[in-house]
Amino acid sequence: MANKKFSIALHYQILIMLVLGGFFGYFFPHLAKYTNWMGDLFLRGLNMIIIPLILCSITTGVASVGTADNLGRLGAKTMGFYVFSTLVAIVTGFFFVQLIKPGVGAELGFQVPVEDIAAGTEKFGQTLIKIVPSNIFEAMVQGHMLSIIFFAILSGYFITRVGEKPRLLLMDMLNAALDVIMKITLFVIKFTPLGVFSISAKVISQQILMGNEVSEVISRLGLYFLTVLLGLFVHAFITLPLSVRFIGRANPLKHLKNMTTPLLTAFSTSSSNATLPLTMEAVEFKDGVSNKIASFTLPLGATINMNGTALYECVAVMFIAQAYGIDLTIGQQLVVVFTALLAAIGSAGIPMAGLVMMAVVLKAVGLPLEGIGLILAVDRILDMFRTTINVYGDTCAAVIIAKSEGETLKV
Image (tube, rainbow, N blue to C red; front, side):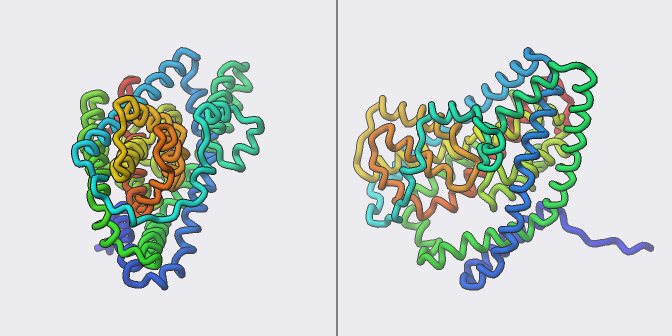
């Protein structure tokens, strides 16, 4: 009899290393820094392939969509679902923060200094203008995702407008490049468990070394922490699965199981963009969504579809208002909802971007910016949860759009 090789599924490897990393960071915080290089290398590997992946996948995806009518229909469906799911997430968070009122009686003395958050705020109109890059190479170097996506969509669309010979040549080149990038992606994915261990150890050890006992921080901000988590869990386990089941007519449980690897990676890295290569691989190969749909919806979603971030911003702003004893009018509360939607769309898919965008929402209703200091202690932990919901929302959108286009999926 041939010897059977013992192997553990990748998502179980990631889960085990996530827990082990947390324990290592908690019990040996001073040693955790010696494992940082693994997490840094892993994130650098993922970041290395993000921009070529987005450029090649969106360009080929849009070019394969074909006519302007098809592209317009696909874009309208995608943006429609993104706005709908984000609004539902905001309303869910708003409902729970008004029901539980976590800010009433909160300890205002427990603050973390806020540094340079105001410097990062930018008007929404300015964000829209910057979608059109003045220099595409500069946009690539600086990682301006909306500009890169805009250029890729334009390139893909106009590839369909050139003659057949150059069109086929360009498509062959782009498809070949995309194949190479996906091979590199699969290679980087193999190191995910080690990267996750390092990142998990780093996050927990940083809290310990700053004097923030995780249990103490959560107990002091417990109601706020639980309110955000409750809203996120309702959105993740009720709203999105129901959307997949009744709008997409797919199996939400099977879809969730297929997404285990990218979701665990999103949880540990707190970055939608860093998780994008794994998300695309899982949606295409496990769910069976075509590259045409996945390459259009997922990179766009990683940049503008921030369900978890929008919910968190709404809860956090209302919590700060309650903590300072400020009663917001109905009009101001509607401004919070609307601004949270715009801020989530303008929020980059990088760790802690939600904090920068929260400053926009606070300014819109005249709340003190220092209020962010109230919630910074638990923000990094909540960032892991909300990023996971962001990525899960993107994958649900890909399935729903694919089914609406008549594709036969594996879920």
